[in-house]
Image (cartoon, rainbow, N blue to C red; front, side):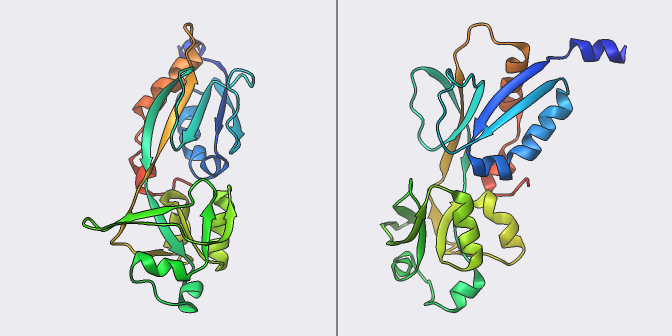
Length: 220
């Protein structure tokens, strides 16, 4: 009976792409749970910050962050991602105190090249800054490790910072100010006849609880 049930399960290989940092800090647990439920489906994960051509690369599903506009693919928002301003305790001890957003201009700011402006709100006041970049990169991993090293301040997804915050290697700045979250979406080609493996993955994403991820609790 057990062997019969196993044979009835969806099987095959799914090609999935996501940003590199998502592959490191979120996908191990997420895909691990998927594998426990669907052991006959194998995964090929393409971790890249480039937006691959899903058709040419034969990709089944793509996790994308930020605005997604496509009339070619099906797009499903799956989570909002909390962001935090962080710096190493050593950096903060050696530099001027930060009491409000305008103080950030005096500091070494490490910017993601897709986010040159930082918008903060305390509920009554909304402030948008264009901090001078001491360093700029498209790699969230680089910005995270640079903060931990003590190179400056960065605005990062909370879920990748949480282990370093819990270990005392990073400090959250301006905790009474909210930072605009960003969205993560799942996109996939509009295939009329999806395989059972593709349907299983889509349904698994629909049912998955993203609340810990969205709140910034690392799953790594």
